[in-house]
Image 1 (cartoon, one colour):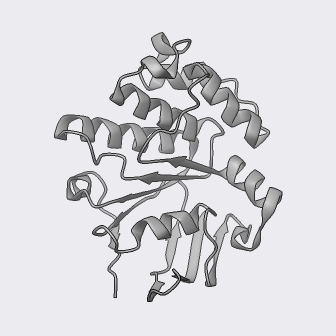
Image 2 (cartoon, helix red, strand yellow; image 1 turned 180 degrees about the vertical axis):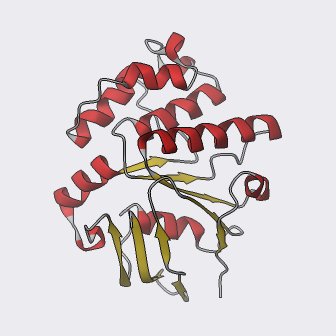
Length: 210
């Protein structure tokens, strides 16, 4: 089992406690987490990414109970094992496309000789030395995907990757994520309110605010 979560709950101050279904994923498996705004789906992603700590429950990647980790140990484990595609790219503006990927390697203390091949796979090889400030919205999103894949993580988490895309580009982005996660043997979770993604990933769960 690559990813396992059990009995997860989280409470925001002054609000009801959110409880989440258990998740189990093997290598190359994908899961779609659907839910309306405010349902808690982004909270679940943050828990799985180690960006928030559950009130109770545990998350394991491989045999590592990383929900118990803190500080630098947590940061390093996340950098080496989890690739996150945020809703907005959050790229480092002073750096080129390729250097944004190299920075991910630096923080994860990994070296990947395939970064340029990765950019080629995503149709970005001609933009590798470009400033990220010159990228189109679609290009910036693909760079964000490339950065999430730069350390060849075990788990890919994508937060609303298609929310601002038309049908054609939605299909392209989902296929890119599926192909690349399969290539590196990663499990993938896409968190979204976009029902179109169900056409591409049949395994799904719904998060509902109680």
